[in-house]
Length: 599
Image 1: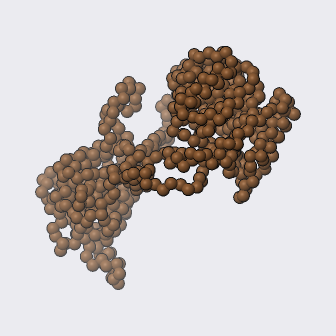
Image 2 (image 1 turned 90 degrees about the horizontal axis):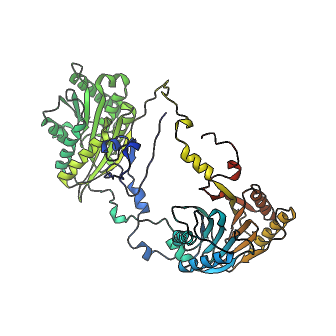
Image 3 (image 1 turned 60 degrees about the horizontal axis):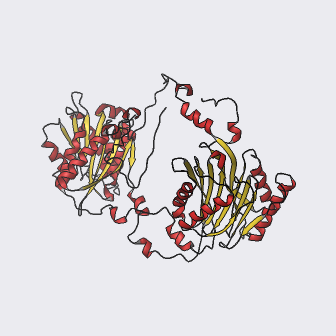
């Protein structure tokens, strides 16, 4: 059994972000709030992808210089479902509600085109047709509850403000209300579509000039290289065994990594491997030379590893060659050989300039993690150091739970002493150990937890309506949808349901075709409503709300509508209960006289 949590952010560095105390009782936390070691100790994999940021960053003044769109290619809409509970306002009749909400729309900058208000009880729905969309309001006075549907296809930035104003107007509050959004269709041809498209999010908020692209400098600051290597030695686990240094050709002396290690008396024996000469892969004797190199390197290692000593660390110098790396990896790939010469927690360090010709070194180190050391807690990290004219990359593989903590310590010292800027590019862990035959010491059942709070919430639910939002699209290449065709289909469905005695007689349809290229159709009958939007192209939304007991009405309605226009296909369908008591369940789910099985 294993559990993993994946996190992503465009603004936070999870490995180096200062911790914040959120004043949460630490007794309830598995990880204590400000204990850095615990936080970084849980990290198994990490990756920084600056290329993704460069694709999503915000060019300076991009809004002002971006080319204005000439044609409208899409018209999304968003429906906000709002449940306002604990309402304190009281109303005598529907007109009181209408007058109040009309005033809210005016204050919030919305244009009301028309109001569809039935004659009847106070608990009937009112539909407000806006230039920017429509709003449905329904008051349930005896329950101190009001429901809102806020469907906008323009002025999306005002969505939240309008919701808060409507909730407040009926005497509810943010604490006593709940809401969620559903992405739906909109309306082509509205006059503000260009501005809406420009303002529609999500927006790129990170300036591109804050993202430093990888430096292409070939300059190498030897002093910085020495410092990084020196501080990275903190990953060496055993000072009594052998440190292997892989250098360049013997005639290319000095080997800086070797010279530096010789100055450190704290470490044990140091063994150098010089890069293989005569390794021109296009020469006829290339294979023979590589074989000779392999034999020579293996003999050198065995001579150095006497008295049961093994390799505790491998340092790959910046001058080492690719073919020598191939030879070494072939030697280490032999299970028998690596058990003979490598410690179980061998550390590998590579320092190189940010250049494609050194790519083999980080591939070598990563394969060492995956194929040689393999299992957790083995980690590989890559760190990029740079300033205005120098770029250095550190790759390191080491075993230990404190890997990230130690890596951050190395980085902190290097930055302070050199003024270089660093970025951890990635941290990758090893394979998890499989614990065969593991048995859990204890099983926890629902009864082992305090279920009073969820049971109280379950019992408080009062579903009053069923709401279904269908999104249909014309599947034909050349759509023949029109306002008349959509209205005709809508009226035929209502007539059919009336003949089947699901509706109380003929239902009047109100049409609004002056909002854009499409149209809005509204039908109200006691306890229920249906609102159809055609966006002027190929998309149709049907917002259908009925009493909670009519759980099959919506599916029948949808099937009948598609029968009238067979080219329509359902692309999305959202079904939710409406009511109070933080309702999330349908009436049929809550009618059981027994408690839920988990309570």
